[in-house]
Length: 250
Ligand SMILES: Cc1cc2nc3c(=O)[nH]c(=O)nc-3n(C[C@H](O)[C@H](O)[C@H](O)COP(=O)(O)OP(=O)(O)OC[C@H]3O[C@@H](n4cnc5c(N)ncnc54)[C@H](O)[C@@H]3O)c2cc1C
Image (cartoon, rainbow, N blue to C red):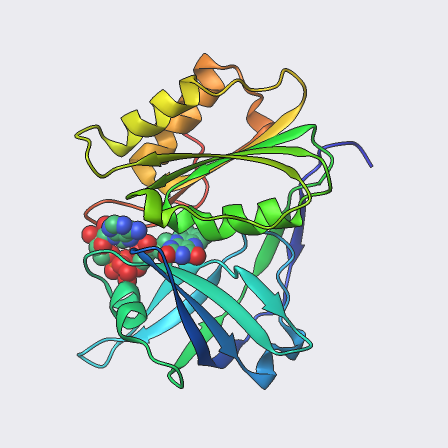
């Protein structure tokens, strides 16, 4: 098989009901929940940026779905970890802010995985809070010694995360608080100051849709990064509920 080939896998999907087993604050703006369920014994998630659907009941009796990342899972123990970014409003953030140990949550998926091979010379992973679960998972799963650079956008120093890894991880953080600059400007400025290796690297970007688009263009058009070695996604869209743009091509 040729190098750097992204392999797509399909998975059988089914709905599972999970119970909150523990809750931990990740800084001031994220909540990590570990769920348990015997139904997780055959849960499959082959890629760090897989997503599952979470189902929430609204006040008027409807069910809505939102996308989240399986941050970590253990089929033998029947556990699944999800990290929730807390923001102003929306059924997912409201549920996550109020959830208590013992609450239940229905999930579906993942329906498929796009497995990025662990054979690149280096990795660059960029994103905001919603991307940190996928970024953290990939940093932890990469092979020993491979250089991986992350650029995370968070509110402040308390919101930075650390990842346990054998890869050669360099973490850069930019903070929104105390600045008038836009998320795009903050990330682009930080990116200018990061020296990328000249060898063959994979770039992954996920953030608010307009921010992800700007970063993608910068990497492709200004830095000349090969299109096939870059994956960018809008994980949410400012002012629109449930508006992910999972694969940016434009
Ligand atoms: C593949 C994929 C994986 C994802 N994984 C995760 C994950 O692991 N953890 C996680 O926290 N999120 C993740 N997200 C993002 C999450 O799905 C969205 O943020 C989602 O909109 C949250 O739903 P909600 O019900 O809270 O808000 P919605 O009802 O969708 O939106 C309500 C309002 O809040 C705004 N909004 C939505 N998200 C944010 C935000 N992060 N910051 C500020 N304003 C926002 C919207 O623009 C809208 O105006 C993922 C998205 C995708 C596509």
